[in-house]
Length: 154
Image 1 (cartoon, helix red, strand yellow):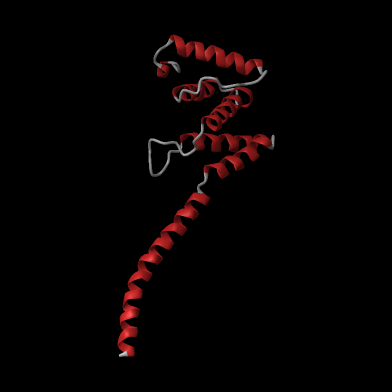
Image 2 (cartoon, helix red, strand yellow; image 1 turned 60 degrees about the vertical axis):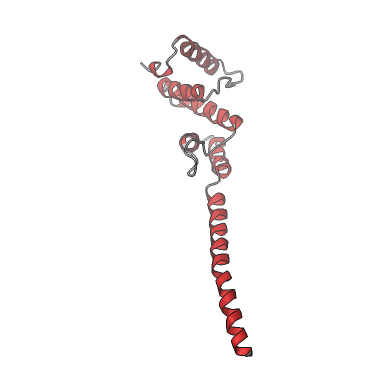
């Protein structure tokens, strides 16, 4: 009788162990995924590269900034991975600054300005930098005159 009860209890408890194990495994996987693919950590690493001042590091930082701005959420393709208007504005500013000041590529800077504009980020702040502010003003006036921003690159 005692043996019979213990086998019944063991078979019932093993029915709960497997689902609990699956839930625990899924939760662990989700936590690892969120930690590994956290956009805040990727942004922090890129900012360290940008702040180093080294030209190769800045190129890598700009590459990472572009990746962060383009990447969408893997579960919802309409949402960006890096959320927050302030963060996105800052990255657009750094990318545009890089292309104007260091890469001397106004076409690439223009492309990223149009992307910022299309996200409704229209008040980028370049501080007291006359060159960047002039570029911003000229290009935004150009966008306002041309209703179709995709014709701007032509």
